[in-house]
Image (cartoon, rainbow, N blue to C red; front, side):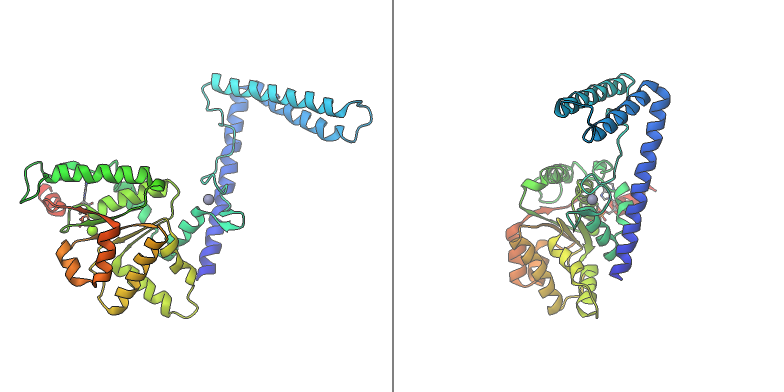
Length: 327
Ligand SMILES: Nc1ncnc2c1ncn2[C@@H]1O[C@H](COP(=O)(O)OP(=O)(O)O)[C@@H](O)[C@H]1O
Ligand SMILES: [Mg+2]
Ligand SMILES: [Zn+2]
């Protein structure tokens, strides 16, 4: 299974690189047509390059070092002229360069013989069946977050109105993703269902994925299934489970919906605990109230969560129901 995924992904990379080359040659052609001088410049540059390369074996040049230096200066001047021309015609100065999707690995998937984070993310998306995540993130992100569903009127005994509360949480989340590398804290969202906990988790996931972070998003129930399968499957590959501990951000959604067994407790505790020890961040969300969580989970789990996570309570009117009424 794993080998199949890997070769699929390597094919994707090959296509990406071919495509990047193709797009580049299209741009070059466009420029040559619009700014013919640049075509001459490129030609001159490659001729000079050739001259430099052959000068080493030439006997007609007295001072090779000096010769090479003057040739190199010529190239620099030509490159400057080219840049000036590009910007005079309103093009970005890197317009003729090749543009890879991932600058880090130049769409090869590897850096120094190790998987690039983009490769790991692709593997995770396949392994954890997250391929549809990208689609969800197109509609659920910080830009599409709608505050109108949260009332500005006081709510039960809460100090803040639902609107003020969600604005505070939203700002916190934006800041969290902005300063992700400097922050060493995890997030815990709780409150009844339909209040945007999953939505806001997706906003955070999108922002981090765009930053090139490796993110796993799973509901607690799915996560337990995956772990069980991997642990008890023959030929199971440990690496993928390892990503639960290694990935930059682990989102466990709907905690409390997984089947509760001593086994799932210990797996869950192990993941949370190991990540905390390794200073790896996560986001856990649940439709339960804090009291339910405390009653339902062993104290060693809850004290871990309460101690290392910043807690956010979601409250207000169920957005799913509001949407239904609108229709
Ligand atoms: N801020 C928001 N703006 C627009 N739609 C939202 C927002 N928050 C939630 N929704 C929508 O409301 C529904 C319930 O939100 P969800 O995030 O699943 O709630 P929860 O995880 O708290 O149960 C979903 O259809 C979601 O797309
Ligand atoms: Mg949810
Ligand atoms: Zn990469």
